Image 1: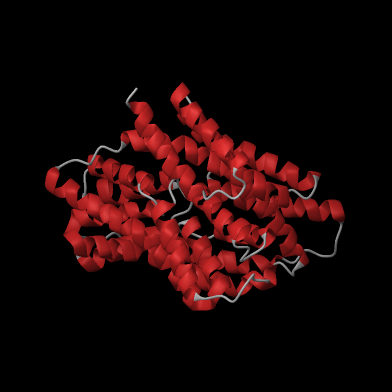
Image 2: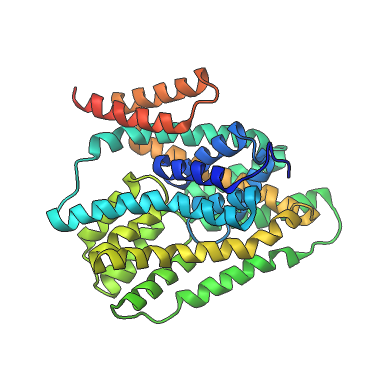
Length: 385
């Protein structure tokens, strides 16, 4: 891989700390922000390699955008870069969410955030669609990949889980390309690392539930972090099943409030667990829950990382990775469309989206963080009308 200049850990700390404070909108938006900063602006990695990293993180458990940050950090500055990128991307969300958890526990409600959130959502949709367009121009290498992306978009739009959509697109799509090109003999050994990850996740998913203590709290969130695939909506189902209906540690209202905080605050949506951990066991609970749910991501990335430079050189895996890349972009597109259908329902939201799109067209290398902040301010100002 070619880098633009000599790598350092400090530049990774600065970049991912800033992204941690400004990355609103969920994994698709986080990927878009990282694409802008790492590929378009700094050129630390090329667009093809960045697409490969998105494809790989889509196939392992945990918060995909956080794992993408870790992989980008590793490919910039080795193991130290991986740890710095992961920690710095997570830390701001944990601090903000923990602060809100304190006010919630002591005052019984959350600060008024709806006007700002109202403006952030249309801006985020534009950021996502802009990233899909830029990455798609690299990923779509012909009618076969376009067809795979269209098929994945359809099945995901119909309700098939994101991970199954992407995995099906990768496996079936690569087999489809292989058959149409009639190249060599299929070797499925390239999938063994992923089967190992799935097997470990399945084992942890079936471990026994536990009662309350800091150690057991850590193990519960470790299990969730090891088996969690898909979007933040999947996280809601896991937390409801484990903590509300299963262990009765929190109420459903507390869970819904925690999810609202996780969606509004920047960084990984999994910082929701910081809020929940604080409700259960104060500061210690917040730290333990956060460590438990994010630790599997560091482990999975370390396991899968050695395979990254070798996989693209394999012809059959290269086909698989191309299919996975276009599948991941198709899922991002569906997310953007679904969010648009929910959010762009009045003239204020549409105006914010139009202005965000115009900003991208007029200012070619505008920082997406400014789009988010501008959307939040516009949302607040328009709410006064």
